[in-house]
Length: 204
Figure 1 (cartoon, rainbow, N blue to C red):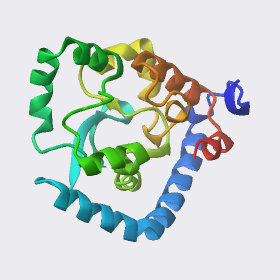
Figure 2: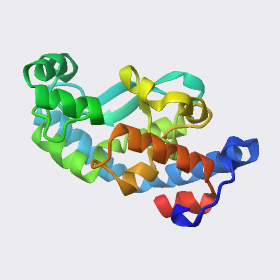
Figure 3: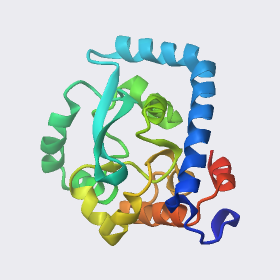
């Protein structure tokens, strides 16, 4: 199997989850201390780039099917959520892209600093706070968008619900923006069923 792993189901056992949680807390604490100057700089840039809040908090499906607020640096103009539906309705091509990937490659709502943050994945840094709160893990399955995206998980949703979603994961380092949501779900399932500490370090 990919990344030298074999089927183990270790992450679905209590011992595996405890080990993973300890690793998350230690690495996140060290990481936040090291990147605090960068974190502050990005907060300032987001604020001066366009009117609106510094952080964007989006409802996501977490462990046990519970909803939590996933934190990101804001990368879009204020009121972007309300502008999505009219944008998709006026452009069938964009609508097809959204249905397949749950994102737009060239989203007109993204600010100039937002494009940089997305390209470098620095917009994800605030999720270190989610990790310390116990809502996410450094590595795990994709945090599921509330709504139509849930249906595309099928029966595998029950497995994904048993673990914390990750800041990064197997799909991010393989298909990234090129894969469809269905392909991402398959990679998430593969990650959960073949998890090991070594695999997490390889992905990080």
